Length: 272
Image 1 (cartoon, rainbow, N blue to C red):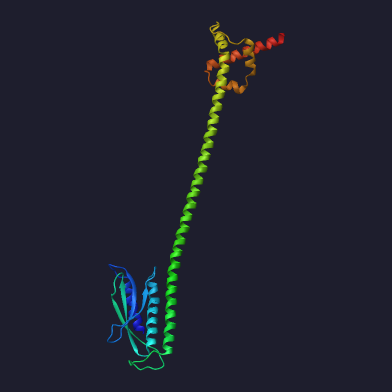
Image 2 (image 1 turned 90 degrees about the horizontal axis):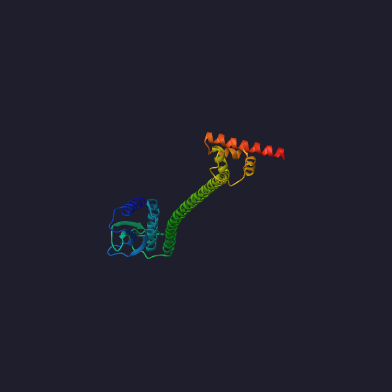
């Protein structure tokens, strides 16, 4: 039996992993009685995910099924053939072997009718073979489900990573928008202060020009008291802001006018 097992395992490995025009679909076990074509005993399908680690289990299933069939036939030596069937074919590569039935008596190759013990043993071996096949099929299903679960977990991790990147980009965009708004407010405030400064300069421009030239070249829209009031109301920061837009000579003249206006205002307040 050890030689039969080793040779059958070699035959299965050759048939499963060789190059074929059509895929291998199953192995058919047939009895091969002398002087007859024999009859089908069982068929062993190749489940999804079958690999070299499962060959030993398949050999056990085939030998157990052959032994169960031989036990049902008595104690004589039975001949069997294992056929590798491709898709759409009824014949293929063959592996012949022999199994002796187990019983109370051993009559060599003599004829014997099936007995109750043999039939019971055959049913038990058949059930055990079915359990092995179911276990193998369940292992293939679990393997496929595990691969699907791993793929789903990888997909979920990718989605979480993409969402994190999206939220980070959105946060960065909001931060940049806030910076732009603050910069726009600063520019707007600067322009507003500049406009107010020029508006004040427009009010005193005729006085400055007339004072510098000594002639009334421009009509004065405001009186001297208004200029004095303006001169007294300017803060150091405002004066510094005005000086930025004047040349050194213009700064000196502007400061002279302011000093004159303040002195005139102080003398008028002292007289009154």
